[in-house]
Amino acid sequence: MDAKWKSRKLLITLVVILVIAGSDLAGLGLQEQTVDAILKAALGLVGAQGLVDTAGVFAAARGVADAVEGVEGAVDG
Image 1: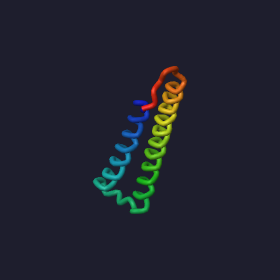
Image 2 (image 1 turned 180 degrees about the vertical axis):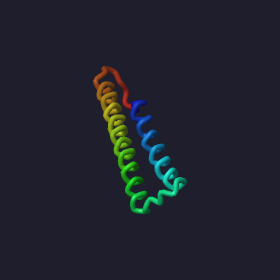
Image 3 (image 1 turned 135 degrees about the horizontal axis):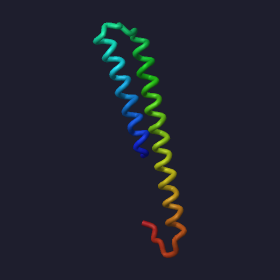
Image 4 (image 1 turned 90 degrees about the vertical axis):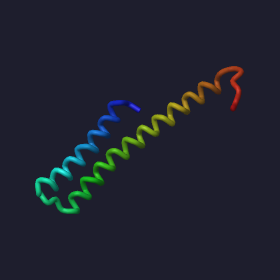
């Protein structure tokens, strides 16, 4: 995984935690629907990037497998 995206996922998570906790501490009184919407958006962003990362790993593994199959004398394990 790219370190840039790891830090972005962490940053998104921390910002959401700070917004929700900060609003509670400051007494802003965010409605439950607003908190749910913030959480769903953040989870969607982090989850989507996780799927992109997973697809990249599978593509890289497929490329390695294809390269190994092309090598003379390679033994299937």
